Length: 428
Image (tube, rainbow, N blue to C red; front, side):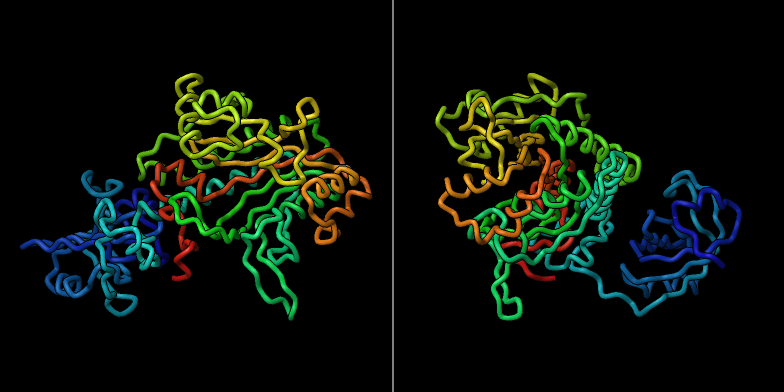
């Protein structure tokens, strides 16, 4: 008999079916027992009246994997309006050792460190699993939106010979006796692939050896990277980002509607044109000094509140960051060379995306590195490509875990990360 998932049971009323899953909860009453079985699509209520079956159910702790054969019977109070009656119950493994928290409760009551220590079982909780479903749907929407616009997915190395951002916060390793690094981003490679496909994207891990111990930082996270050629300036990149976010949220609604409902979310709308302010104006709005070189988290929160109050938008572009705070490959604003053709996108008062227009002339790269007192040699394989003709181009990168955390209202990015890696955690 073919296994039926719980979500499909309403179409099988009156028939005998086989389900399988985990013992989610048992309710042992005087004359009847209720066994709640969880599978990937939801919960099934099994009604047990036979004394022998009841004895078997009593001996099965929560999280034991079982198979149940029974009759699908209508019951408006049961999950999905049906339940299984006259069942037989067979364990598919030994009795489970219960986890150190109850997965059947509406919310996990264990502390976050306890949940992370026991991630393989904590992730079974519907709320933790829902966040991961939303992440998967967002990535599917990212890919689908860009595929429809003739972007090509690429896969670039995660072990590199030099640090992407010219910084010291990289993980070093021994590469057959030579020093190497875990990639901070695919930035160099995705730019080079513009010379091949014009429009490219990548979904992959990036590594930052920054000793942050905050609710918004991870040492390894998933980056959704995009790069496109033949742009006029950074505004072309911003337009693609707007459409990409709209596509991601549409796919979350379509593919992960159940997860959205589980978490009680209202998905934000992406405006036809996301409001934008220049960095200098952003400082004024946030009440920051005019000579502030960057936006602090408190400034971002103030800007998020302003965008919501003024434009009714959860999203806000801040453009024209000072060149001193942008990587050397950033294209300056031709009208105001001290400022960049770059941007950040704030989502509900938190930086979500960094992007902008890049340099595309070989001579400009030599000048940019010289201005920062950096040698060309470590970047030779990258910079040399610009001798062979590269179009004006730009791109952006979305941090997946940060996006999902903000979307679901998680207080800590680790709540939406399956197995986070940070300053303190290498396991499980």
